[in-house]
Length: 466
Image 1 (spheres, rainbow, N blue to C red):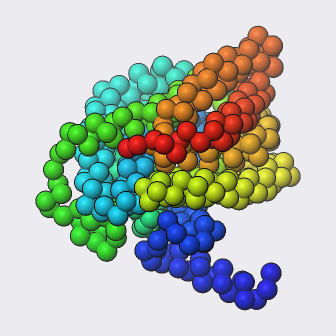
Image 2: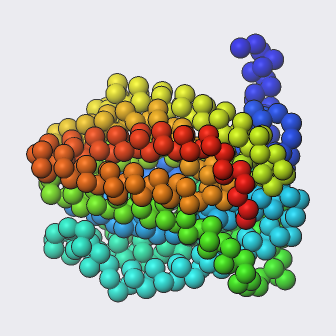
């Protein structure tokens, strides 16, 4: 690569981080992908770093029950993420479509209704956390000792879910508008604070007592809460594309209905996937310390997957805005280019995990049984990354077009009709144990990606109206 090309890339990188408003419905597709994907990849990387740092600090407590509590809680919290991601995907699709149509006023109205929906759902979920935290852990197979010692973590995470909900939804609004750098800065603040506060509240320092695993939840909610405050500052009259002035703070049931129609499919996708992960976590609880190894490995896998989701989110924004501008062919070209870049990235991660699995996981635990299971999980699951790289971009592109029904159907058959029965068959009936669970994950994800590519090529998503 010549010096001029290197300099050109760094100028583009600086421009993407700075967040200058860009036109994504004309000009170079490669340039549009870079400008959108760099802040989105960094945004997802920050979320991944948070997941890794959080489990690292908790692992320093040398308490497998504490690690398992995080795994059990987050498996159920994934249901919350499902609702947040569903509303978020609907917000991204609708805001991107309106921005592509140059109707900023309608985009701002859609953004406000997405926030109203998020607040409503988060209040309901908080009530569940306040009254049923112990029952949730018990239902997931947690021992009475685990529940007695660690239930406060679960209660804090459920009760403070509004910080998760708002962080997801408002960042989705920013992404749909093309303000990807604002979403990145929000997570930088939220997760940066969480990383700083995590060890303080987990282990204690000076007048601050150590709260153990509960401290991780306290730090998470404080960090994310401040990140949401930053988001609201920019929405309420900031310099971004979307601004929510006082007159925008209204409820429009027609738009909420449209958001629910689009979001129902997206929520369905994540609910189906999340429920599958809950089943797998429950299945893993039958294999003792293997569950702790599985929990750590999944955190590392998330660390690799989340930056790839940044590329997928960039594709979703490009699809929505280009369909709104009447350029379906440009939308499709953007998807294939983003998918190829994603495949290259995750291909590298696969090689890294095979070569460095033990050193990576040894950073979190020295228990040989935990390590053995974690290494096996990491290596087997990563075998599906090449296919999954395409699958995640394709699925997000369906969502960006407002076609949330197609990926929902794919997820239902992939997770519930295939993955869950296959995992149970291998782990229990064939007596393969945890290895069967890991294999089922990799095979199911690969098959779903192939099906998604075939359907995407048919092009029906281009005609979806929202």
